[in-house]
Image (cartoon, rainbow, N blue to C red; front, side, top):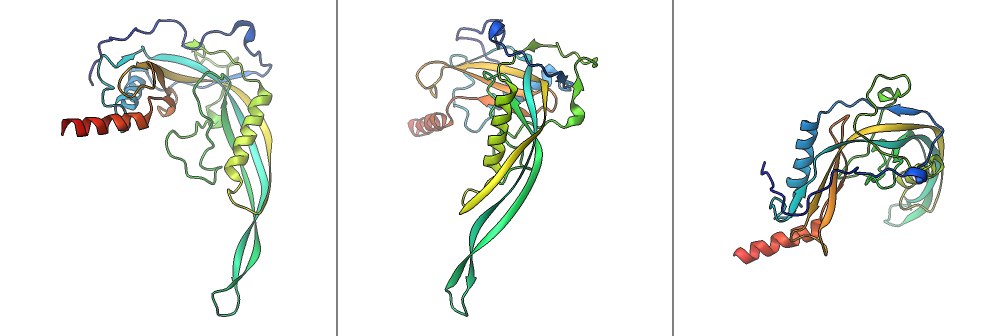
Length: 269
């Protein structure tokens, strides 16, 4: 791995997510924690591979004049784990053949569904996590970063646990439970309802909600190369300290990076 000598202004050692003070949401629910399994060295390799090894990474991403890395940070990010179920039906049209010809008669076809599972909703709005619905609940096939999933057996009560929940930076919560529930319900409804139907009726219901501190390794980087938008861009990669999987990522534009690589290709020819 190429070591980058910082040429851009370095990151300060301040908190990644500043404390909110009076603006922080003070939930009444008990906190649960998740045990960290991944060490900093392994997380750093995963994060750097995501930054430098992507197909759509800018051609100059490794140059010291273009990229500067922050140190990797362990942060305890608050999440609402919302358990939901959804029931309902939808009606589509199908075609029944009329005699032996190619002409068919349109007939309504009703299908019903039941799904249940849990969605993880970030309880800190500034954390760059995009809510994704697990594939077991969704009708669509997703690519890219998978949904963050947390089985109930991984949850430990903070008050009765020896887990070092205060290990790393503690991130304040600013998303109330009611908003998290509505967000989860809307996401599940959009994932289950068919894109094309003449009628559909589905009703998501919240079954249980848990407030969780989830350990995440967070690596910021600043990019000021050929694929930047207007000025230097602050980007980041977040890796689960439980599973080692990518949780969130913000990178320079892949389209601008691809255009830059094409320019280089034709320039050198």
